[in-house]
Length: 390
Image (cartoon, rainbow, N blue to C red):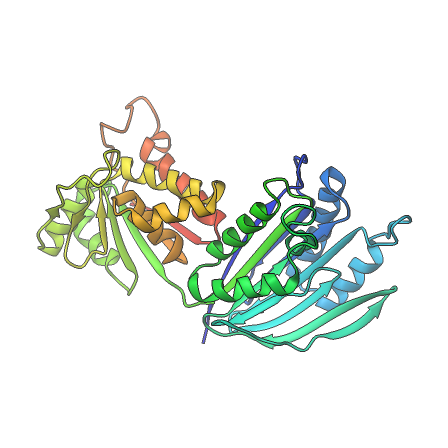
């Protein structure tokens, strides 16, 4: 069975530093997903350069077909060792996962990975190979639907040192925390955000080290088709709606005109909910056979704002809002974050006088700019986005 490899990551910079000394590369190919987490020695600019160099070299070599053995050998023999600390200038973890769930992992001086199936920790045999006075750990295993694979930099297991915890948040503590998340959270972005915010709290908002979490959740693909704005040629309405309704994806319509087109072509009643659940967001509507119907530009704009808050804000303050509110923007944001792996945006190019200055070219319209913003934020949290203009 072919799975969707849901990958998300988040980081904290060491307090006082503008750049993170960790770097993550995620590469998708036709056969597999490659993830590289590199941790540069020290912090700040130097560490960032070292981590970026490490992850870029590894990612590029693997993408071009080099084996893991060749890649690791190149990395170990290329990266220098600090004369003072006798440590490699960058440590790294490399994960290769094919779409059948087969995993090949290499770890070099980073904390051991975490693997959970439901709420159980899965014990994986790790083979060690000495290279230049260091030990490379290699693992081969298979994961399945619902499994959570998490890799972290050492800032995670040191969280709280000298602050709330004398010895930091140990590997076992992180493992227990992830066990609960593996059941509760459906998407990888919630796992990464939840763990990174917990580390931030343990550091009392002053991280003592660069801290990075990469969460990899194995799940079946969930496609959302979102239609906004009428097609440029109204003669295309009927054939488009038939195309839009194909497949088993969740169907979302944003915009009054788009909703009227769908209701007309489906011969279904368009029912508007007159309750304003949020004074800043227009009410939703209902069409039989459509999962969610909202107003257009304003609701999409508010949705983009909520997803941005989810990515940039305090996770434990943001998520309760998503879980409790029932306005159109909150419903759409929650659907796109938690119940979507692939987003297909169907964007009508008919000009709406309310949103378009006739003197501007079509690509500067408010609607298209908001759609592109939405696509960018969705890609930032690991979703696959396709845009079709109609």
